[in-house]
Length: 260
Length: 260
Image (cartoon, rainbow over all chains, first blue to last red; front, side):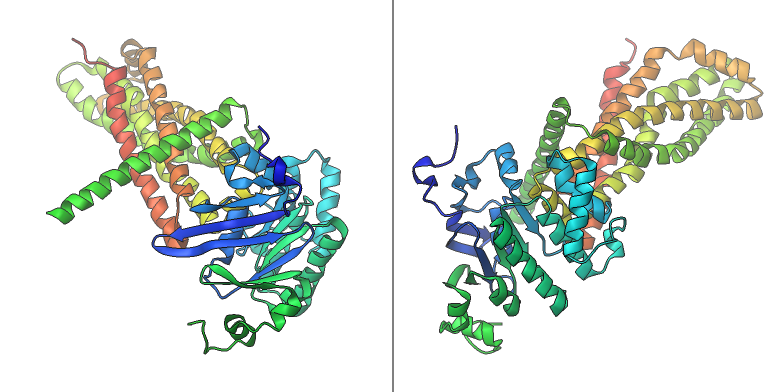
């Protein structure tokens, strides 16, 4: 049975999250979170550390099963998919991990080529060309035969971005893509996110603390606090938000409604 | 009293969770193998890492085990005038018990710990999540090659162990009791049946499955940083060895029933 909800599928946004509830022990990490995102939009999720931003994107990619709620990607409820259906869906997604989770027993070339070798029918020559192209974008040309441990933290982060975008996914989830990068490289990453949006209509969700980056790439900025989005709007409305929680975050004020 | 009962209850539940987890992992691994979803390159790599590099330790440990059995038997046998039985005694002890057991213990210590440490550190650095997010099953990619490598290499190592043990035994019998190699190996041929040899090989297959599955399960369920990897690795070796000893008794009882 096609699990696409045909009646509503066409009118649905590309990504829709409804009533997402995630608990860890007695602590509620995400408390009935709702958000929608149209195809080609970039959503920036902000919030102080430990507020469930990474949990949210792990739920979207199916790495974490929420206690309740619904997640629709392109009209399909991913929490109801069977394992192989979920994997088919995952082929359309790219994820940049915070850690950056490169496979340390593989070279940078093998890491970036991983998704292509696993799931595409490209020839080895085409794969090498794709990998070289993506590595050049993140300024890592010439590192193909190095192992992740031979690269600096920032370089590993960039390699992991190259790995996530090489398969031309429709939805890319970035967990802190610019943390640990210098301002120039952060801008390169911001431009990359914007270019993917313009050229390939890629939809992105970016978890970050970096306000400059958020304003540069976000069509929508959402502020996650105490398990829910307390403020959702465009970069402009976010910048001028009167919500005391958002204001405290933007101003970096240690005193305010957010208890540190 | 109540806390004791509570602890006991929690312990029993954890034990069954663990056993259930290992069995589930085994079923999933077998289902990938039956679908012929096997990476030959990864499997041969693991055969080299887990098997070939253990050969020298297996030969040293089982060689000396054969020597010590011969040391004990030769003195007794010469005293009671049954020197012709030393070869058979050493051969039987090696083929039925010592070769498969000692090989399994060496492999559990060397290869099992390596499997858990590698998969465990992949788990805590989100590399397992990255595999899942890239629509690649960690069981297919990591567990299948390791199980196959253990299943192929452990019987081969057991064969080497048999040869090393019997040769070591023959040397000591010759030096201490003047039993010639000719006499020793005649005795081995007369007293050791092929079914004894194959019994030991069957045992090694069971040990291979136990070691591979426990080590992979411990790795995949590792939690909490470097200390977690250390604990998982220790647990993997301890639990593998306990299971090897327990299953060895029942396998011996089934394969070599006592004469009525």
